[in-house]
Image (tube, rainbow, N blue to C red):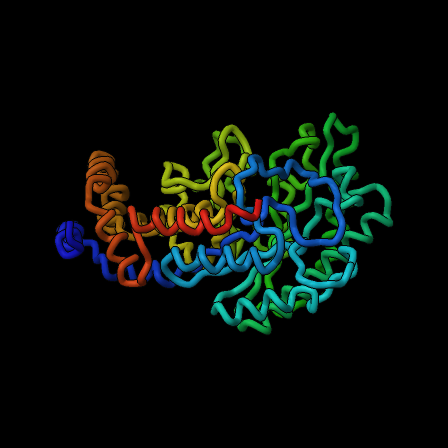
Length: 412
């Protein structure tokens, strides 16, 4: 079907496809660096992963160096319509030095910023509170030993300084997202003490003032992880309260809740108390298994909530999955494009008619509208968007993904 025919079909329902495409082009998605190397990083030492973080599979082509990772990212961006961002973890430094986590500085990440400038993209950042000997207890900011807490507090302070410098260098605010793996495998006897230590550590870590035009702090909860099945210190309730009290962003990771929880439903609820939100879009299967996102009901509902509740301007959208059973670059491309497709579908909904039906309690009309709209020719609109921006679709996209994978497969 041609774009003009599809455009007319949507126009019959009062939907302007050109306006939807123009809005989609303004929405950057922060693509996560850790899909490209299975969450290994480029530090000069090793440590256990911790926190239930593990990529499974051994598909050929894993990036082993910053240059290889950047090459893979460049290819992925070339397959994705629009200008986007990169979400960088502190363990992905690019330096010949050997700094420990409490010694990192901006210069250890400067090559990433130079690359981002050349690519015309923004960067986001994350302290890395796992894959380190001082995280092997699955306790960091809430550890009973002050020396270990101080180590991680200093790490967090330094990442905030680095994030602010990144924001200054790129002229684009850098979101610095804080997630810690802290918790207990078996039932603790004093949850309160651990949460008090976590709160005090966060307070100290976030005490130095930073320019919110350059960097923003976000805090991220988790339901549980491998080795912390009985208690996660930084639960959703802990961080939601903390974010509201302290004025940070709240990160809602779609894999960090019970599988039956509706993340879309949480957005408008927390938005009443928080000016801005960070999303980590993932696809849990059973739990936080971080599969490549599909256009499934959860993703579509989340995108619809962002549009319906007018939250796009207040929400930073990042992805968080890692799958080593398939081509890592293809995973990026498929995941980001599915996020864009979900947003486009939401932008093409007849929201005025839907709201009128709901507010007049005409739930029959609401149901009819939502179901009939599923039959409209969305694919033709998406194809036109990609064509305008010089990005392949269908068999052409598959060919590009397969050809690139063949080139990197020799990495082992």
